[in-house]
Amino acid sequence: MPNIAAVTPAERYPTAHDVGGLGRAVARVRSRIAAAAERAGRSPDEVRLLPVSKTVPEDRLRLAVQAGCRELGENKVQEAARKRHALADLDVRWSVIGHLQTNKARDVAAWASELQALDRLRVAEALDRRLASADRTLDVYVQVNTSAEDSKFGMPPAELPAFLAALPAYPRLRVRGLMTLAVLSDDPARVRECFALLRTLRDRARDTDPDLVGAGELSMGMSGDFEIAVEEGATCVRVGQAIFGARAVPDSVYWPEATRDRR
Ligand SMILES: *Cc1c(COP(=O)(O)O)cnc(C)c1O
Image (cartoon, rainbow, N blue to C red):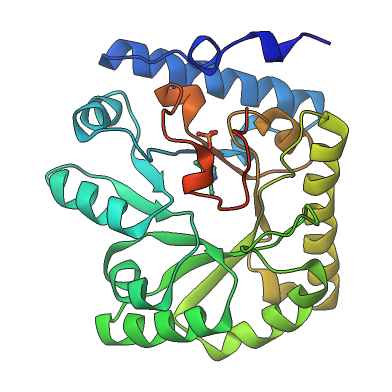
């Protein structure tokens, strides 16, 4: 096994500063997705690449849009709102992929293309109400905690069936599938278990009632583990650093429980 600990994040994830460089970074990620899909006997077309732009400044996001990125994922609503405003002249869909508080539901209902981190009925209720007054619908993924870590975000697998069964009460939400973050581990086997668990949960939910998980999408995999996720059935991978370069901000800003950076 390669000793990845010897490689610094900046070496592992170089930062491109022009349209060509960003385009090549996206192309490299796409070809790695395609190779992983082929290993698993899947079509690369089944996997959507969602570029994650948190902490990336607006000038570089303009270049990324020029390089072909038509949707961007942001973890925090405030940061997404600021960037959306600054890039309002561009044709970009904004995906919110981080935990949402009910007091931010109005923003998300007003302009987000989707929320990938739904894990509370109170949030579903707040969104549905705001969406109704905005006369919009919103694609949602239900976030599941597959790592058995004491995470503040994502619901325990045991609670998923009842949660899915409750969502039809919020008709403005279009359930697309499930989302997860794998365990913080350098052991690929443990990471793979998380992704396999999400797939199993999706399959079980579909067996119970095919309408409850929408298309049954699986949003899983990030820069450090998206190939494993694709092998395990991901239909959406959320990739930031492998496209935009290493982040200076530690992940604990986004995942309070992250005691060290994910690779
Ligand atoms: C930041 C983030 C990602 C992408 O992580 P990278 O290491 O930059 O690829 C994926 N999912 C969520 C929820 C994130 O906040």
